[in-house]
Each structure stands twice: as C-alpha cells, then as structure tokens.
Image (cartoon, rainbow, N blue to C red):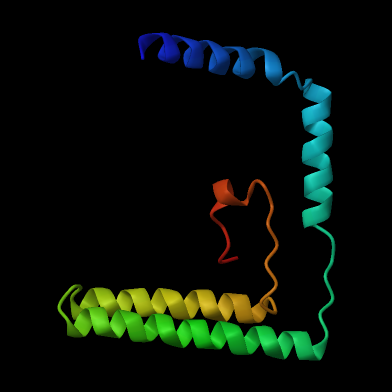
Length: 116
C-alpha cells in the first residue's frame, strides 16, 4: 500500500510539473478566444424568447413556492423568507430586462456590479 502511494504521488507530481507545459502566450490566446466567444451578440427569435420567458417564469414561481414551504415548516422565519423572495424577484426582473440571455465574462465574478 505504501509503495502504491509513493508511485501515485510521483505520477501526480510528474504530471503536474511536466505535463502542463503551456506557455503564457498560449494561455493568453485561449483566454482571448473564450472572451471573444462569450461577447458575441446573440439574436433570439420571438418564439425562443417566449419559450425562455415561460421556463424562467416557471422556475421563479417554483422557487417562490419552495421558500413559502420553508417558511410554513419553520425552517426559515417569515422575515428571511420575504428577503429571499424579494431577491428572487430582483434577479428575475434583471434577467427579464436582458431578455433572459446570459453573458458570461471571465471577470464578472469579481465585479459584483450586476445591478447597474
């Protein structure tokens, strides 16, 4: 068992240092490609928009129903439930304003400014 552990550690060590030989320019090129792909403009048809709207509305209603059940069962208090539902409504309205199309930017997780 000890010998297996030593071999496993050696293999992992070798792969981590020798197997990932990407240069900075290769990584930058991959990041640029991903960023360009994420920023392309998407045009949805009215049928697609209505389908997305219906799905998002259904999810929104089910999540509200779930929070209401948690409040009924005493898992969370009424005040906390109202706060959660108001946040859900904010997110739903934001998504609705953007046509339910999500744009993923690599840096968005550090910006925290989606309300603007």
